[in-house]
Amino acid sequence: VVEPEFGVHNAYCTEAWPSHVMRQVYDVSFLVCIYWVPGSAIVVLYTLMGCRLWARDSHLHRQ
Picture 1 (tube, rainbow, N blue to C red):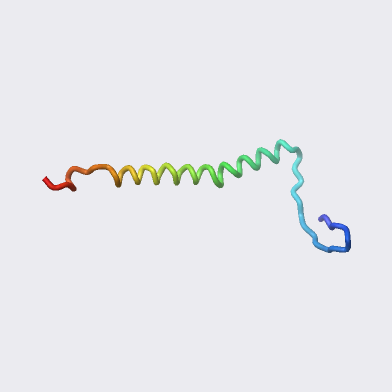
Picture 2: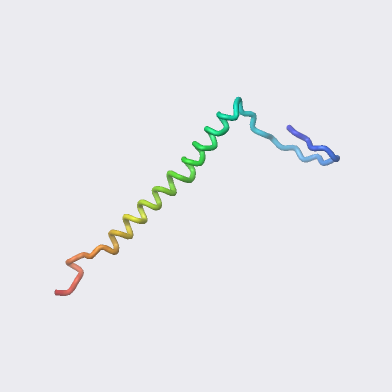
């Protein structure tokens, strides 16, 4: 617990990592799992859905 000076009594916790590299590995892993994987899936799936919806379908057109 860290208490700042000047009579302010706000207490908070900080993470204690064994090394700076371990912290970076955690941050990058968290970023990939939380943002990149779901974001990439959304982009790919919406692109496939859009291509399929906009593709010409012969049985839908008049002859």
